[in-house]
Length: 168
Ligand code: NI
Image 1 (cartoon, rainbow, N blue to C red):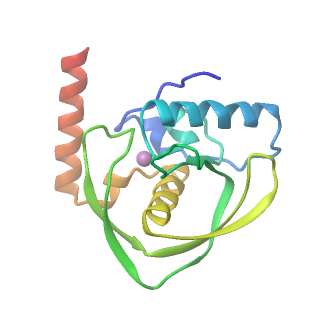
Image 2: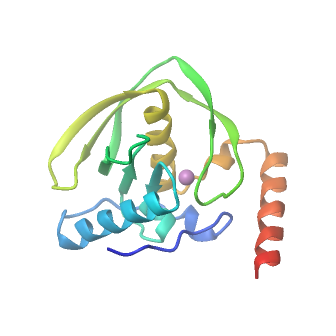
């Protein structure tokens, strides 16, 4: 397993749309293992392949405090989302230090392949539902801050560019 470098917003590669995984083979299994390790190391509760510059539809999530409830979603699609929405604070490993509130459907049912290539469906609410939708956005090239106002986005870009210059 290996730690993978995480792209930082506003890196343009975060805007790429991920392609479906054709076959859950050894390469994909290695990617899943590396992404999980990278997420736990960060530490974070979710990571999309887009964030490690792999533009295929792979997501890992673990919202447990014990770091032993890994969810793997390959080629995920939302088959149902609730009309009821809720607002929750989000953060992102690609947007370090920035947290803000985003409105999303409160409950989603997602269909995907697991790390063994088996089809499954999962109904999620609360933090897991937020996280699934946040990571699926990444696969479409959308970072959560792009749900915020233009003014906030401009401020966040400036702040992150400044941090990058300071650490360079
Ligand atoms: Ni994110």
